[in-house]
Image (cartoon, rainbow, N blue to C red; front, side, top):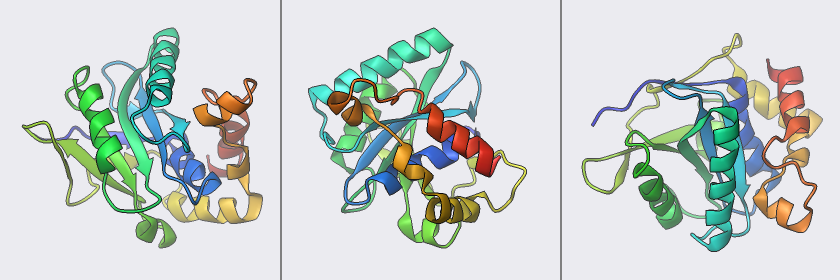
Length: 199
C-alpha cells in the first residue's frame, strides 16, 4: 500500500513538537486534521499527556475531536505521538490507529524523533498501514512535506521554543480535566504565537 503525499502547514508541523516540549517527561498523543478530500494537514489537536493508555479518557477526547471536526468540516487523518520511553508507535498508538483505520483507510501516524529534532531536520518518522492490521515505518519522510516559505522551519521552531517558550501555553484534554476553561481544542494563544513567529 502506498501512502498519499501529505503537506503539513507550519501550525500542524509545530503544534505536536510544542506539545512534547510542554511535557518532556511524558508520552504525548494528538491528532492531525484536514478538510475532506484534501491532503493538506492544516490542524493538529493535542489529546493527552497523562492518560496515555487506551482508556475512557482517550476515547472521550477522540469523540470530542470528532464532534469538533463535524462543526468545522474537517476529518481526522492521522495521529502524532512522542514517546517518553521506547521507539515507534507503541501499543496505544497502534490501537488508536487501528480503530481510526476503520473510518479512514489511509490513516497514518507520525512519531516524533528527538535525534532529528535536535538536528533541525524534519522531526517525524511516518507510519502507514500495511495490508494487515499493522503499521510500518516509512524508510523516509518524503510522503510528508512542510508548506512553508521558510526552508528552515524545523530549526527555527527549536530557536523559538528556547527563546520565547511558547510551548508553555499549550493545552490538551488532560489539562481540560483539571481546568474546564483550558482551550485544548483551539489552543488560540499558541496558534497566534506560531503565526507570529513561524509564518
